[in-house]
Length: 507
Image (cartoon, rainbow, N blue to C red):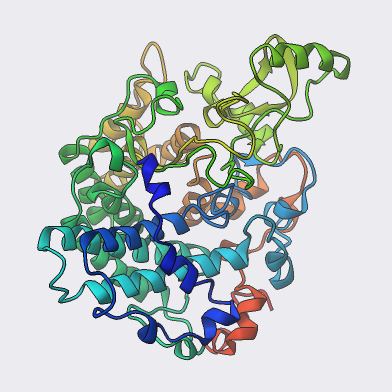
């Protein structure tokens, strides 16, 4: 769906800026948008829905390191290779209301909060204007409703993961009313968005034509539902939803792990959803989502000219940021005979020993076709291997390890030669094996910290992990499973403190 990035609905993006923008806060959405002057064709609705996707391309969400800043840093897989203020508070667990607001270069916590609510408000507008709209045929309407419901629910999914109880609304509200909303219990929000995700799954297609592949399909909704059911410890619902994807979707595990991440093999059969990025669109912006390109290399400084020449011969160079490289703990514990290791850890390149390890499944070193700050490499959000491991987890919690082995072993089958299937483990042993298997299979892909939180082991893992730069083990506290609401939002809306004056324990 590379052309989606060329079909953005600029009216919504211009009219509805972030919730902290004063011009936005003085507008009345009902005065701007109504069925009588909006959405007179399916093309107009599609452009509006494309605008929701575009918001998820923002630096604060799925562009740059965006949401991954909160889902990966401070866990046990990646971290910066040097001190860097934009990730220090998260990686070191020295967060407070001020430091979380300072994490703003390229889109930190305040912008993440604002952009998620911008998606919600815009989705509400789309849904309201699709209701009883005679200009849109039923088939088109169902898909657009499914996409808008998904995007709104996906935003609440992240908001409740990151902040717990948050303001919650499902209709187009006046800005003054939004500015006075208190926090709704996350359990209620999750229960209601599960209903919306199911409706989205019912309305969305199984798949799309090649030019539309970056859109969410019914299986994208199903995998988020699976994750929500696991958060709720609704093991049977999680297992059943995961098996829907495994048994009924056209997605399959690729035979070769490396092929999943090949930039020339985007939208492959294992990918459930990836966001498309296009080279030369916003070329002056920093669009490198993760991409741990080489920097501060090699280990022997005297070899730098030779490595530079070797890189130049391949149209490569020292263009990395060094903010997301594998932690020593990850490197030391990753099984040496696991065939996934070379895709997750590289310590030498072109015959030179590197100063830091890198995660090559995430990189594209081609400076011609994928230059720094201007590449077209898609961002993988969800893939089928994740679903198999979620199914193994849910089945193990529900019925013990018997049937669960087949799901984890399906993922391990391509990881070892000869095969090393699990068998004969107790429920607790398989539970711990799943902890590790998700680490090796999905490292750096935006799942790890939330996994540790829902398993209830974040603090234990952080305290036993070897880090390169910061010392989070000395600082982490139970409150750190959530972020503090940004101080900018508290100033705009003091009602956010009514149900919790401590701001998630940070004051």
